[in-house]
Image: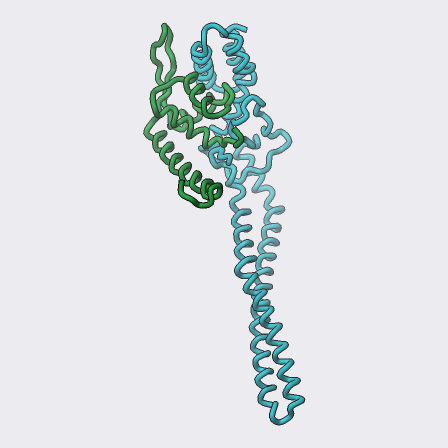
Length: 221
Length: 105
């Protein structure tokens, strides 16, 4: 293959792209081949890969280039015609791309049409959350109540001790048991508030940010 | 190299290579390939993207009887590079602190 044939094949393979894009790429590879050396054209061309492979790496990248400025909201997961596999094997460190091929207006339309589906789901999730917070509150109240009652009963037992030692000790014991259970609930409540609640909030934040995460400029760590 | 290279890092390396001197595609590719294993066709999309983002600019200059396209860094590109260098420094310190047990390198 000559340089000219390579460049023409590259230009053809880039076809869906604009004239500007194609001529910039052809100019780059024309320079590249000239600079890579006069003698061994075959070696240079084989290192570059086929014009189709080169074109595929350019096309894959020009898609993310286009998708950054408009930033469509909440892209749905890639459909059956998703463009996830458009990258060729020649570029081991190329930018990561997983982008569905849906235009922005279609996404908005889908979101609107699917209100009957996601609105109840959202409500259910909200209800579940309120329920969980209610549960936390209940555990707190139970802990406080048990500790309070335990202390109260134990003190009553102590007061009753001189009058009737047997009953006094029994009441004191029951009071201490209540106190113990209350403290256990207290530990549970503290654990929920310091460990489970922050994790839960982080999880909610993560879910809410999920639709916007993909637009970071191809960041792949 | 044993570690995966993200596109952010590759962008920063290209900006850094171009920031030293006005340079051209083949030379950029060679310079980047001295430090990491990227294929010959990896860099054009990166250069094109950086150019579209306004981080790089191009000009044509006669060389050896033809016009060669040169790349040069823009003020925005320089700013991006500074940010990347700061990020890299922080990242490197963190990794070092894990590798070498917190001793300052």
